[in-house]
Image (tube, rainbow, N blue to C red):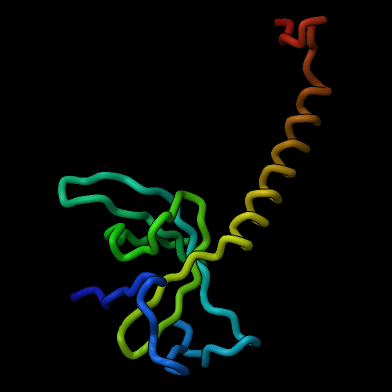
Length: 126
């Protein structure tokens, strides 16, 4: 089965043509599906991105299918249209998710630190 074409956000889709991959009309009330960039890697066939789908599955796509400047952890809006899937960076949602993850990590670290025997230098006493 041949994968469907993917358009990075730098290519424009025809006006009013998009639907989400779930088949819903692309409207402000129905957000596009979100994929997470799980990782970027170089392979013998060129650079690729591992993308995590909402159901937890991962797919691998050529990095050239993604918008320029994409990084691991970025959220992508996925919109399906007559010319294939369009991937767009979601910088505000990505930043919010990173802040929430950092806050959770800080809370866990603070709770763990309280349970550890530390010396005056802040090192763990074994």
